[in-house]
Image 1: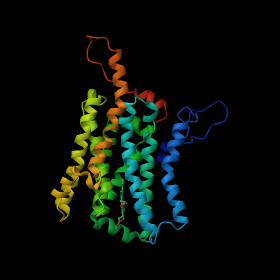
Image 2: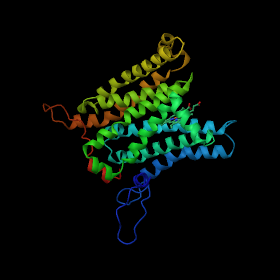
Image 3: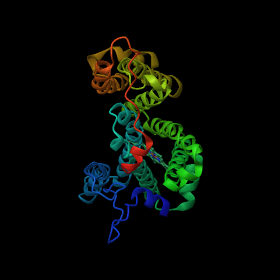
Image 4: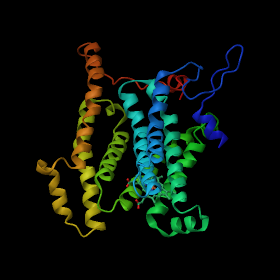
Amino acid sequence: MQAILRTAFPPALPSRGARSFPWPWRDRAGRFSSLRAVTLALVLAPAAWLLVTYTTKGLGPEPAKAALREIGLWSIRLLLVTLAVTPVGRILASPRLLSLRRMLGLATLGYAMLHLLLYAADQNFVASRIASEIALRFYLTIGFVALLGLAALGWTSTDGWMRQLGRRWKRLHGLIFPIAALGVFHFFLQSKSQLWEAVLAAGLLAWLILWRLLPAGARLHPIALLLLAPATGLAAAGVEYAWYALATNLPADRILAANLDVSFGLRPAVWAAVAAVAPPLLALPAWIRTRRNTPPGSAAPAPAPAPPPAAARSAGR
Ligand code: HEM
């Protein structure tokens, strides 16, 4: 727990005179960071809003269940946002953005732990019942494994663990992708017929994985990024089709075909493809700048360099 707190509140460099408390809105140099402060406020906002709605009895007849679902939703949303920081930070060449990954990752873990706490509250904190339900209900077992994975990554996210594990640290933290896939699977398993956001989450996760699978030189190239948009839509539609075909009696073919029919509104797979058009648009200005600065006849313009890890870390990762 101490390690997690230490990571969430990175130590500021000791200033001359009084030692300042390592508040999360400060960067590693101990300076106030408006980006960190705004991010912190944004990640705390859903929990604060839920608390207000709970106290004003706005959560309906089963407030504990409603809060459990809402916090579960925010866990998966924050997880996807955390994973999106690396591609967006690289595309925008922004070490400051990359420096937010640890805070966002720990916030995801915090929400997932709160989700479990609310589940325990819904079960009146009867430990034997909670344990047997988690062991016997497949969707809860999957959620529990995902939570254990998040906890392991949160625990080892400190500078000390990074140093200790060296190159293995990156491999260990690459497990965030299978963990996210488990989180999305848990989402599908308990969604029953309301699959809209689960399919969208699957599509966005597919984009995040596909981006990592691109050759390093193509990850910032607008054309390569544009090609990821249809791939993302197809991946989301494929997951949705597989789900309906394997887990329900509903006509999966007709649901797949509905992706091409906009008369009922856009399906989540189409929204995932639309969202995937944003990264190539973000990458375009830097790419045009690099091309303009490349003398004619010289080799193809190199993509904007990834920010050096030292820069990211000094910005307060
Ligand atoms: C011990 C771990 C976990 C337990 C016991 C658990 C339990 C539950 C329960 C009981 C529900 C509501 C089911 C219903 O409405 O009938 C739920 C929904 C959900 N959980 Fe979990 N969960 C766990 C871990 C996770 C993790 C790690 C994530 C994501 C990273 C997650 C994301 C979600 C989502 C997105 C929903 C759906 C919310 C909705 O339908 O609006 N859960 N979970």
